[in-house]
Length: 135
Image (cartoon, rainbow, N blue to C red; front, side):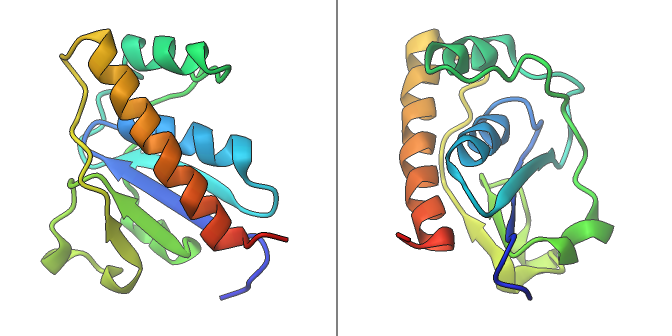
């Protein structure tokens, strides 16, 4: 795979909260790589509380859509981050699959969403540094 223009895929069940937040953080921080997100069972919409807590940190995900995981596109991605929504044993790109065990905030209060948002932001910051280096 080419070192320039790496692509990251974030996957959660509904593509409504965690993977949407991770994609937004990644793309706001990265200079030479990009992220996308998808869901194993997409809900069709982004969670309104996720939109609200991301707006609090200056990121607007209100225009995003919940998208299905497209297995035919997996070769496009250098890293695939799952929030516990993929059965690793059956996944075709196991060599590039990583698990981030972060609880789904759906149905929880806004404070819980903020804690999840901040945990995702910290992990994404480390990932961008790892993928793009310090230079």
